[in-house]
Amino acid sequence: MNASLDISVRGLDVNFGQARNVLTGVELAVRRGEFVALIGASGCGKTTLLNVIAGLVPVAAGTVTIGGAPPVAGRGDICYVLARDALLPWRTVTGNVEYGLELSGVGREERARRAATYIDKVGLAAARDLYPSRLSQGMRQRASLARAFAVGRSVYLMDEPFSALDSQTKLTLHDQLLGLWETSGATVVFVTHDIGEAITLADRVLVMSKKGIGVVDEIHVDLARPRSAEALQADERYHDLYRRTWTALKASAQ
Ligand SMILES: Nc1ncnc2c1ncn2[C@@H]1O[C@H](COP(=O)(O)OP(=O)(O)OP(=O)(O)O)[C@@H](O)[C@H]1O
Image (cartoon, rainbow, N blue to C red; front, side, top):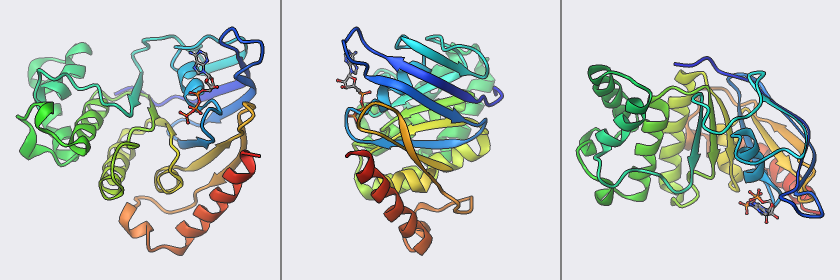
């Protein structure tokens, strides 16, 4: 398991060779072990910001560091989780979860033990020998989460991982992600369009401006942990945070 890392973005510009920057003067500070959610209008640069942190998009100006070091593609301590799971169709659930561990050089016995533990944590024990084609979308994302957290990364960059799921399945996945993250100690940057999801999961919800200037508002989610996604639905403070975030989101799109 890697130690968690902080993320610092100062004065970031990204331009993709265009005359006008896609991102201009963006600032972001994420503490070690913090869970932040990024929300904002479509096209405001959420994915671009994740890609910069992952070292996949070049920085035109500014400074970006992860644990004090500049971003580099393929860093072993950062894990990127996308909306479309990247399960290998020719491997079972167990085979897929073991795959990441194989790449990390974990020995056979330890691999099997860790894969079983994480498959259990996401409630897929009964499906461990099934191939992805036999799984529902929700089960596939659970297998992806098990694979991502079994390898124990320092930073998780998550780009709308649950956007294709129905709201009931999402609640289950929220609980499972929270369970995995709370024991991992990892830093998470989670992109979403779903305000409820952002509040359920994050310590802070960061609202990005439509204008490409980055974070313009933040909502501190002072709800106690461990959280239950379902219980929060009945919590008035959750609804209050929802309203505040909704107001901030509307203002960010002006
Ligand atoms: N590879 C690229 N080349 C040129 N322009 C790009 C590239 N990737 C993104 N963009 C542009 O950068 C801007 C920000 O895109 P980005 O995907 O980061 O936004 P987003 O906030 O994640 O959007 P969404 O919520 O719709 O996923 C958009 O105007 C997009 O067209």
